[in-house]
Length: 174
Image 1 (spheres, helix red, strand yellow):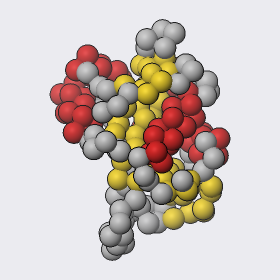
Image 2 (cartoon, rainbow, N blue to C red; image 1 turned 60 degrees about the horizontal axis):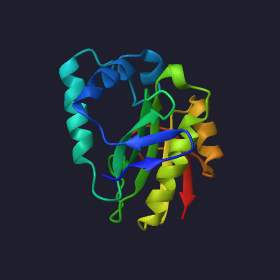
Image 3 (cartoon, rainbow, N blue to C red; image 1 turned 90 degrees about the vertical axis):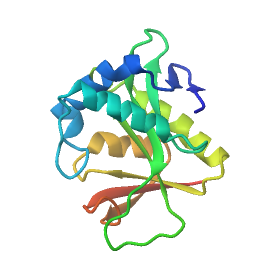
Image 4 (cartoon, rainbow, N blue to C red; image 1 turned 135 degrees about the vertical axis):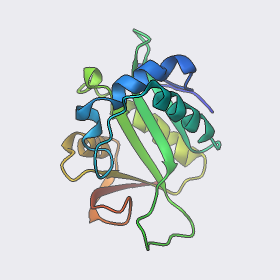
């Protein structure tokens, strides 16, 4: 998987040493409350290691899930995802679609890191030939909706096309 740099961040591959960060991030209700239809708090270190392994297998040259590290401190701040998006039951899309998403530790909220990292990955996706990238957010997740707007995604309204739930849908064409 390729790594990327921005003015303040490094988007890099995951290592086994990152499992503690993953466990901490996904054990927080303030992070999990907007992920999925119902929050699942991570409690088992083995689950963090399994998640890291699954993320490492996601790399196909276009898609990936990166660790976001702050250059100045070398502390992990979050996760940046560019991956195929699961469609709701009964929805067909033979071409498949790609989703961009982010999960950041609350200690790093409000600093612009999500938008900075997402912009770099969005550019990567389009450079690799993607024609459109979507983002979906929980209906009440204004923080992520603002990130979508900051990176130039257009709000398309509420959709039930993905994840078997209603989400705010955003899209960015190449």
